[in-house]
Length: 305
Image 1 (tube, rainbow, N blue to C red):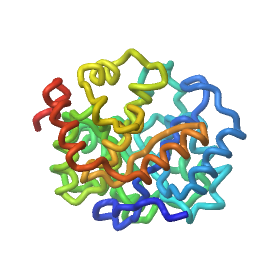
Image 2: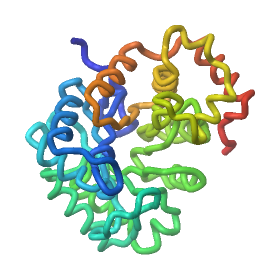
Image 3: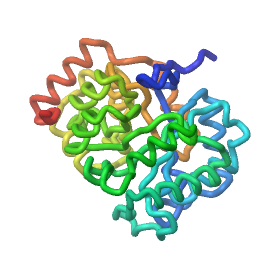
């Protein structure tokens, strides 16, 4: 079978598959649904066997890092590994629906990275990302940014990233120190469309999260902002046999500045379906342009920057 399509992750030079694996699903209870060790092992190997070479995780994701280390550390050369910093080491999981505490100090970052490397059973990360889009002031106040840049100089991480959102993303791009940005985006979440283009022009790698619109507007999910936005737009004549989920995924893959789109699942069938959607390629240009026009008319308009 042919390899999955790849793109260069900005100035990093890493050739990443356009579909990555988001490992938040591996966290298990209490933050997520129960996931057995066997399920975790199966899906991780299925992702690598499908050709996916970019895996994203976090300290915050429960036992996700430990499961990656336990089950696929012996295949470390098969994938690029991204995790996050700023997550408070030793903190109990936050209740579902709440954000876990984050502390952007040198001590907490170093402890977190040391813990991540041990859990992941590796001697380096390919991308170390700041979590939850801290402000420039926060990054500079207690030496957080300098600490991560030091880890890059020593080879503990190869590249420095930001898992960011507006409004702080504008400052992050202007700082010129981040090699990779992880940014939310989909057909029904286009607020960051312009800032994605700006980050790409600056030479950064673009990792999209939420590119499957969190499962909306399928799987019986008839609530939430994604469904509400989808309902405002009549795209049925553009689907051409695709399900809404397939259309949303291909819309994301069509973004010209996307390098990889991380999608999480614990179901090997869902994973294979995502791979097949990627293999279908981008949407035809006329379909993509018309979908964007209708989304704009319906008010699903990119936020001005």
